[in-house]
Length: 385
Image 1 (spheres, rainbow, N blue to C red):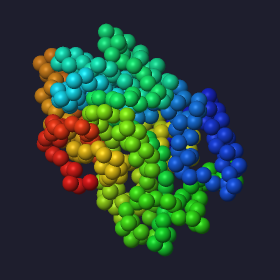
Image 2: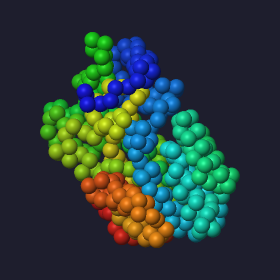
Image 3: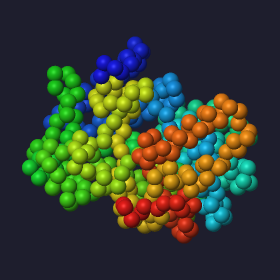
Image 4: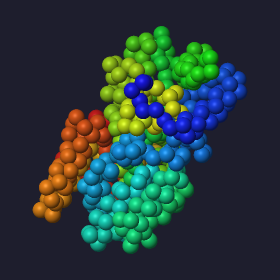
């Protein structure tokens, strides 16, 4: 990891505080072991110290990664057009956005809906990070202060919600359990301490209770390592119970089940992001780096169906955005030469298979509405889930 930038002295001290707290708590466990899901949750969300709840910069050139809304306003404009179609069948619709990042997607969606004269009754933002909440407020104040009256930050799901739920790159940050196949059995890999360092340790004496893992998985080779996100179904269940009517649109990187657990993907999908460098060591710079896993969209679809949602769409990001007119929405004539170039580069990154266009997927769930969603009119791969 010598190629990674070194944290500042202050950041190192921050990481060390969280590291020592986690090591102490792991050593207090009866077997000196915790699941990776618990470790990941605390590394990301430990109050005051976790990656997502501390004050460090996450997005943009000076942060750790860049998301689609940061690349181009066209991304939010397309989502607004999809929301508009759903709004047509709901009398007083609202929007609920999970993890709104810098707030720029909210700006682009609200600005587009204002032009269409179809603003939502409320634009709720459910954000766990105080730092992000502050950034979102500042972004909205700067870009569209007259629309702030529609926006409110919530700490729990609105009851009897009607409208559209949006979650862009949210599922990948949900804690995952890690497992390994040994002699045709599935065992859980967790975190222990050895010589003062975090280490992987497999619990050989117990099978991981993973009913959601496909029954054919033990047929894969010994030593096969991957993840499962057991948090998805409870999260969707809470959404379902809070919703009266509407749609859920989830955008993230991942695969259907058969691709997720492909024999060649034998070391799983865990990835860490620090200052625009990607690597696979979750024990490095604890609290300073993002830890993610790709999304198994079959798990999402199966859980949604069991809960009562209709799974109405699944496609790649490029097909979704093109179906909503991403290429034609922007008035090119209003752009100068530099803006035109920047716009073209951003669109390429959103659409090209080698960039975000193919790896990122969009899945749509609905409750008590039955309309074919425009974003899936070019390609709908629900049958692949």
